[in-house]
Image 1 (cartoon, rainbow over the protein chains, first blue to last red):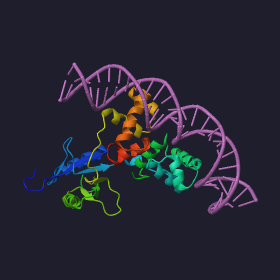
Image 2: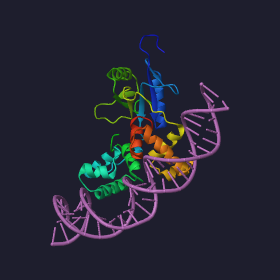
Image 3: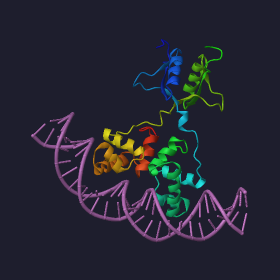
Image 4: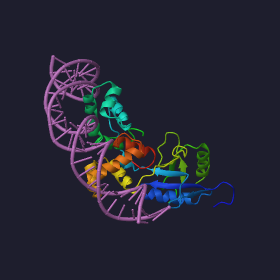
Length: 123
Length: 123
DNA sequence: TGCGAAACTGGCCGGGTGGCCAGTCCGTCC
DNA sequence: GGACGGACTGGCCACCCGGCCAGTTTCGCA
């Protein structure tokens, strides 16, 4: 480490692509004032790169479906969502059904997880 | 391999702490084969750092609770979790109950969302 | 050796969830 | 005008979920 005052900035790598990860490790290994995290060490920052093949198309959701999805992510039940949006529970179920379909999910929990993964919603 | 070879690795910064962001920008600006992303440019990788003030306390979850939580985040039902872990549905409910309790959630969807927010699990 | 924590299991039950059927409005595009 | 998709609503029903009660074993720690 450097003998001066400020300690090195510690970076960790979370890269899907092995080639890119390798290149970055090599490039960053020679930078003074900067260090890659040792296994188990907590880093100051993390370098991330999601696999581009994972999110080619963004899902086309209607405004209403986005409304329902947002409330689902808050843990709201169909009844609560219905009250919030001033619609019937049946309509909520209808939208939830399309959501499960479009997001290829098996249930509301899976739907929220998928949506968060694809960046459709922020948690 | 120099003139018409591999282009620079493009990095973008998403750092809460201005001081750290500044330091990193300075350090990385002088590295050959590496470049910071221009505004709007798509980067090969992103350097992220969450604000440490955001997550002060980590929740104490048992190993079994983490097992159940991970499968919940995959959208698995209690029955599926039970099969995966070779335990009864009753035991799964038991762990889910503690999870809802510890994560201060109203249901499994809420629990997964809370856990993801607090960094307990990755989606 | 006793005591608590963790993991595990059972029964019971009210309410929630999701899938199926059906239908009505309203706006757009051909 | 006719077709179409989006939003909305209803009934019905099997299944799931979460909360309540109860119990067991196994482990480590005082």
